[in-house]
Image 1 (tube, rainbow, N blue to C red):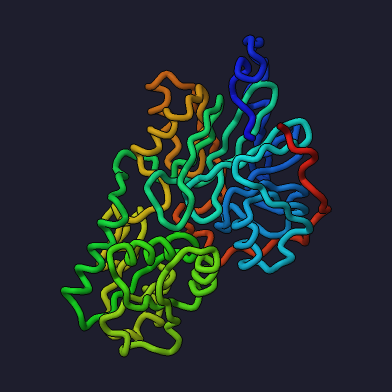
Image 2: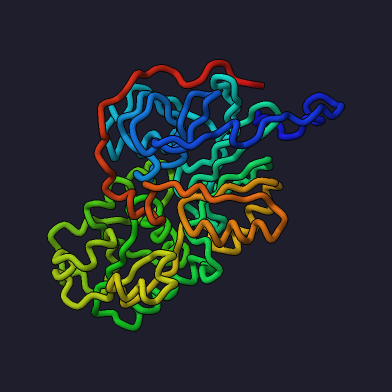
Length: 377
């Protein structure tokens, strides 16, 4: 059971508030966020002895750590991407279960970003800090929904942390894809999607809309789509593109976004090119990517959901990272909240851009071993 954020709830009478602050629990190092009392990093940017990982995109989940604590699905995704020996030791974190690591209590909670994505809560001295990782609030049939976690300090991403970003329902965007296919039945519809999370979500939304034809996959998407299906997520009939091209006229083909401008795409003759990304809300981005049909489908919160999530946590202190940090920091301050940007570097632009191929490890695995001792509570 996750530790409570209320001292009164744990012992009946209220206790004096701890003198600890968020900065006592987490510090910034060259490898990223570090918890000295627990002896671990969170989503470190380089190999470290102990890592807690929020999800499987490669700008958060890197190979070469000594020990990795993550959800079962994230560990499996890392093994698919990097090989079974991606770390010297691994340990599964079950949702909501509290683990004692060093001098802190740690628990993992669904983030709603992609399959297996988690927020990480750290409790020490009566203070709870929650690191969101990447997250979204929209419904997604391919992963567990975001779980708000009450806390004192909330560390939130801000990939789309500007008021211009308002994401429509994904189903409405997929309806545009199906309408275009009906309008141009003799053209292949070539959709750029990220291999982890976005591809599976687009397929699932197409199935919900009643599309029952095979969806064709670029080779880079095949293994992770197969993994989702192994996890019980029904994506319907999928087929590899293989050597086919113009014979797929009228079909929907998914590929990594970078392939839209590659000679690989020329095999389809005159395809309708689409990109599923929150970034194509900005038309210049869509044109830059060569997208004839922009599909505003994001696996991150838009502006309204970021603001709503900050409020819902009840946190009085907000740290903002990898994204449009200053705008969200300013908004938080107008709400009477203490807020600051972290200015972390090394994370992707969002939507998994850095997570498709995955950087090679900088060094071999360090010392391994279990991350946790006894379960707390």
